[in-house]
Image (cartoon, rainbow, N blue to C red; front, side, top):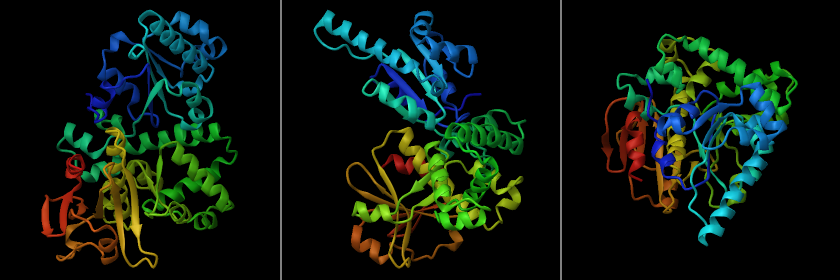
Length: 405
C-alpha cells in the first residue's frame, strides 16, 4: 500500500535540472519519487551500496559515464565527490542548449536525489549545486496524509506511532521495536558518527531529556544538570544537530524586532511524536493518554502538522509563538503568511478545558488587531464556533483550514 503524500503536486511542477529531496531516514523519500513519476524512466541507485559509493567518490566522471541520466540517486550525502561532476554535466547541457538555440533551454529533470543526513549535506553538497537544483524537505506522514489514506486511524495511534510510513503500511510491525531500531541505527549512529560525537551514552541521555521537554522552552542549563556531566553549551550544540537532522524544531518567539527575537528562548518540539513517545519510555498508547506528558505531546503533534503543511506546499510562511514579557498572556502558534496577515492557533487537548467566552489575549489583540477568529485545535470532536472570536477545530481538519489561508 502507498500513502499519497501532500508534496506530490509540488514535485510535478518543478523547473530544474536536479530535484533534491531531504528528510530523515525512512520518512518515504525514495518511495515518493518512485510513486510520483514513471519509475522505469529513472534508473534507481542507492549509495548504501558500498561499491557504488566507492566508485562515485573515487571516479565520479566514470560513474556518470556508466550510469547516464535520468537517474534517481538515494542517500547522496555519502558521495560528496559526485557533486562537482554533476555541476559539470548540467553546465555543459546549459552551454550546448544556448549555443544551439540562442537561449537557455528550459530545464529538464535529469537527476532526482535523496539525502537523509543534513549534517553531511551541509558540509559537502549545497554549494556545488547552487542555482542548478530545487530543494524539497519531507518529514514523516502528517495527520492529514494518514487519515486521508486510512480514515479509521485514531489520533491516539498517531500520537503513539508517529508518522513513519512503514508502521501504517505493515501492520504486523512492532511499534516499540521499530522505533528502538530507528533510534539505535539512525539517531545514535548516523548522526553521532557524522557529527564526530564521542560520548554516545551522554548523547542518548540528552536526547531523552529533550524528548521529555517537547513543547517546552529550551532550558539547556536544566538539561545539563540532569544529564550527568554534559555542559549546557554541549547540550545546545547537540540540539542544533538534531534540528539540522530535521528531528526537532525550534519555534522562535514572535518579536517585531529581530534582535529581540534572537535573544529570547525558543520552544523545542520533536517533529514526530512517535519518536518523542518512544524516547520518553512509553510502550502502550492507553496509559499515555492519561499521562502528564499528553498535553505537550498533543501540542507537539499540532506543531508538526503546521510545519509539515508549510514544507509540503512550499509556503513562504513564518511560524512563531507569542508571549508577553511577564508571561501572563500567550498564544501557542502564530502564522505570518506571505501576504503579511497573522493567524493565531492554540492547542487544547480537550474542549472541556476551554472557557466558553475564550477570546484573544488583550495584549495580542492590541498589537495584531486580528480580523479572523482564534483557532483552538483539539484532539477530536467537530468544528464549532465557540464565540465570535474563537473557532474550535479538530486536528484532522487543520490541514483544510491551513489551505484557506
